[in-house]
Image (cartoon, rainbow, N blue to C red; front, side):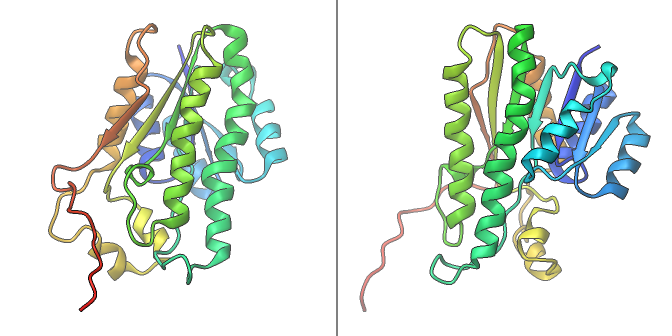
Length: 247
């Protein structure tokens, strides 16, 4: 029986991925900051809970080192913990928001990867699944630091592939577009109206959609690696170039 570790497991993509793999009989390690939610989820799914803030390097390494023997062999790591904060233009953005996005989306992903990866390389097998975003490929007003953080995820994933050549360890970058989770509610700091407006009049992706994509990539034969998968709702597409004209 294989083991999967999912970060940011208390909501959204992380929770959906945890539920998807639990339904397939995987041993499950769920990691998150919100203890009450995490413990309840772990109890329901018969998972091992790691209450941990991925932004804290020492905490991450201690948490991974504390895994009991039956959960210590991590076959798949899903680096899902991440967030967007605010949509102000760069010259008005809150630097605290920028720093939190960098600490979570970039440094947190690095810390957990570095804690888990040596064991995978030693065993000659494993799979790192990083949660990227279409924001890494297509800029939009207000996306500044968030899009930059996800561009890091994309390039880090590609460089992991280069480093891990010949080790048997796979790396996949999943890049969702508009998806209705708690993402926009967090971005707009609890403003329900602003969050709802993002998805008004269209059918967004769901956590379950991304969980299915993740499961498909992970369950492919060991000789097959999906480098990156970009996923949008059918209602989301591309627009013309933005051209500002003087009037």
